[in-house]
Image (cartoon, rainbow, N blue to C red):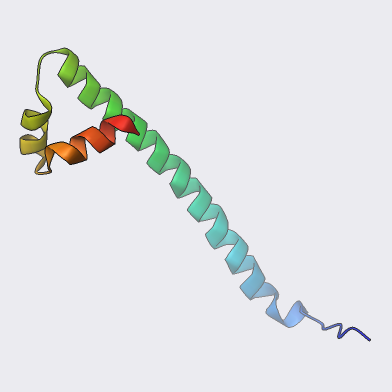
Length: 72
């Protein structure tokens, strides 16, 4: 026979898990939006003639990091 437990004593923990999950989903969406904005801003600089190396130097990252940011 299956062990059926009363989980009501843990309801506040379940509620907190649900809240944290919702926050994580929200933050993931924001991160995607910021990533797209960053990419668009960098692409605008490149379209105006700024090199990836110059962007990397200004941001303190490698040129390869800029390439990855532009690819996402």
